[in-house]
Length: 239
Image 1: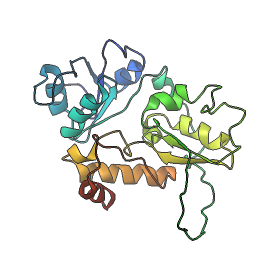
Image 2: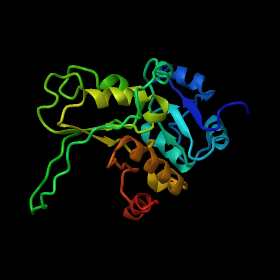
Image 3: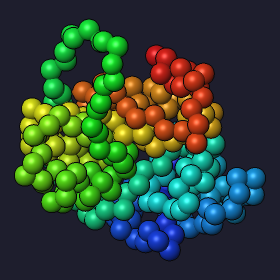
Image 4: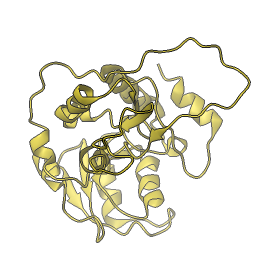
């Protein structure tokens, strides 16, 4: 009963203990369960943890298979945040100079024409893992690549970093080139499948709040193998 009602932390054999320091700092309940079971089968531990959390609650850590893990959290009105990264509790306490506002390339008013348009964007920014670790490599998609800035790219980031580790977003804001734009990772302020969520209004308002604070104007919207346009419109029309 003393565990946080806002956050829990899941782990399994693949994704072990990295990132658990943030869970300890927030008094989040750490648990393990078998997410390979079908959605119709009860989970002894997860079901109790989920019922304890206020909705929408954050479930950090990670578990596989992804679609079943995220489906269960979404069905219960929560969202997941992949947080397999070191020293999250340290980054959470690094001060920022001022409220973080991510820069965006200037908007163009060119009328759309009847042709194909292409956007390059880096996915998997929904979690904390990529923002801290995987973006920093010398690969073609790495933030540290010497070629970054040659072409316009939209980088997905997790807007909840404003709450958990704002110094990380500040780093990207300060080191961005004019060709680096930002958008929210799936599916806004937390990774969830909106078509399964009973908490679309609450989750939508949370997303709206953090996107506005971070100066993010768009977000990836992922769902469970399909897109329900009616659900998408409900999510996008939250006000």
